Length: 224
Image (cartoon, rainbow, N blue to C red; front, side):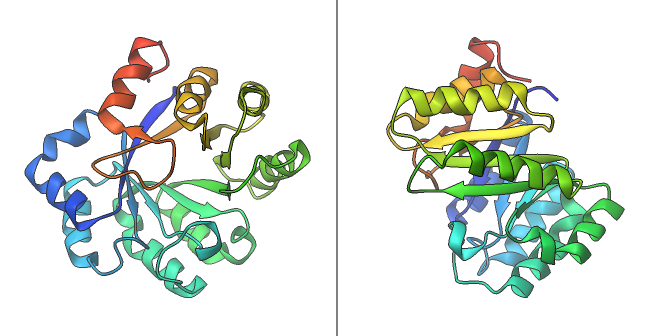
């Protein structure tokens, strides 16, 4: 799978943007509907999901990994099941995967790929922690793993780039913090399969606007 661009959809303003400019979805590869962020606008989000059926990555994020609204596990699974019919990808935190058998089975039955995610917003974890995350995704038969970590130095970036290049499972990798923006380009060039930008407002430090990210990745030969 060539590196692809994901545009995050997190606000009512993002939903309004997509209503005004439905052709935007043709400029990038995937729209990530962050269902925890959109929890008070689900009917509107679902109407748009129908329009973009098959182009969605659906996420209902765990509160400990940046999720909004302090949603319970069952609430998050209910949101994911509701939007699975419109999705091509589903994101579930690796910490949640052992309890997610039902929603994982539903995703597989509907042909939806699953990415298991790990986030650390405060530090670059030790190599062993990242390696265990990759191994966990493989052990559970997931289609890919996502590693999103804070980076302070270029050394941190080089470590993660090497993991992307050598991983036995496809990785989506990104940095936050001082080298976050640079990391999005370098890691895509190293082979990160899903590379996240935003529509109007960043929801993580280090993100590019999705259109600009698509342009830059094409320019450096990293776009799918």
